[in-house]
Image (cartoon, rainbow, N blue to C red; front, side, top):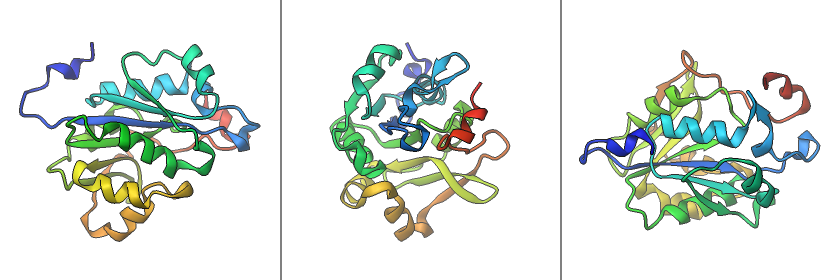
Length: 205
């Protein structure tokens, strides 16, 4: 069982929400969740980072080749949701994920992307530790530039769900509430590159 099950009773319940629905259109149609890094699919790496970083429960949103991902990847004890509208972009997956968390009694959701293998448990733990209240809005930063993972207190979920469209994800909410964001510098412990185009595949090992 994940070690964070033994967290103090008064510690916040921060869910890990992994968005892993992308079809890898610019990668020749190879689903990003199943790209192999260090001998395992990216979806396994990302879930491990969320778990080791102290998030619980774990939720993953699948889309492209969801059946194949379920069959080939070890998704462990996480809750799996499928986004039938994954081609609309990240916003639709974020809405599906937050809807799945809505009745789980969580204080916050820490959102991570499957195609960022350079972001590991240390960055997850650092962002998670910045949670203060259900209104918390926290993002990792890299040299002062906002990136992932991002933590959303539960009180923010309804507005994010209402405004998460296309590939913008929660960007509209983050822009409107930029003064509320707590930036947590993570450049010393993580690399925020994406696996988006064939040249990026060289970053996988």
